Image (cartoon, rainbow, N blue to C red; front, top):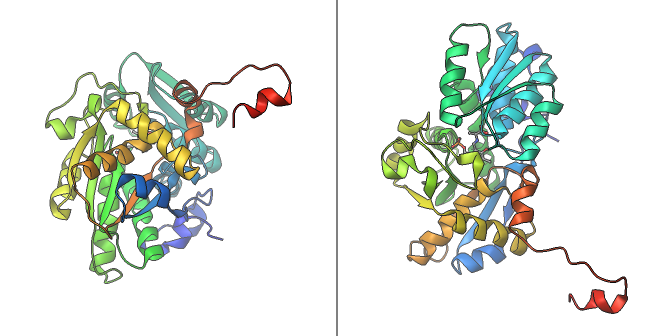
Length: 347
Ligand code: F0G
């Protein structure tokens, strides 16, 4: 059993032993998805990196274990972040584990319920603003500049260092890099981190190849695809409802260096992929995570893939984070009279 990514990838994540704050994150499954692959493009090999199975239910735990450990090492009293939900959940949990204060700033009314419940349960101070994530991040940067608290958004370099370990795990499991890595993009840190991880393993000779990075944004929040800031980003995938990504430039570099691409998918396409995954493979991710699967479907329809292509898709967060969206966009509960005959009608 892994004791978390810092212990597992110690040489990449240097830190004083006594400062380590971990919930034993990482070592997430790389699940083959043959039924979904068949629907997307017969003959491709598709693997799902189930990041929703991290301790707080999203990939954010990888960056947060290292950011909080470094905060402890530096003698910090508290941490702060802006968030569309998952970062705040992870920051709150790891701060609790470390015995530090966490302050989180979230956009009003646009946070999935599960994520809000996590931040509150872990005892974070939760502030909401009448604005979006981008505005919350500006505010949080200003507060962090006072030096009184440490920012644990992905502009904290330790976040990206931690998140790189997902790429290491994929290479360690497959024995090489995949042909394509597909991922949903919001603030653009995760795609940046994965690419850095793949490059590092390649440099060290641990893998012979590097994947092409395919990033997908929601069409109402697609600044990188459009090449301009989106002032009022809107999408059902609230986790990626971001109009001015902090890691915009390095994400473009990841695309260009890898020979990949960015594209956008509509909310309708996201919801379709979201249901498809749950029904074909028995795995439930949150809407933002499904954007990358919607992207795969879109590319496959254009004849982008060929037989034998090996694709890894990161499913960034667990479906239970956002039960409202799931219930509104799936089957209906039917009221029946309590008779066996009634029940068998559903078969
Ligand atoms: N998927 C999920 C479930 C997310 O929570 C996020 C980002 C992303 C994808 C996009 O990752 O920002 O590195 O490109 N969530 C952040 C948050 C912004 O505050 O929880 P990214």
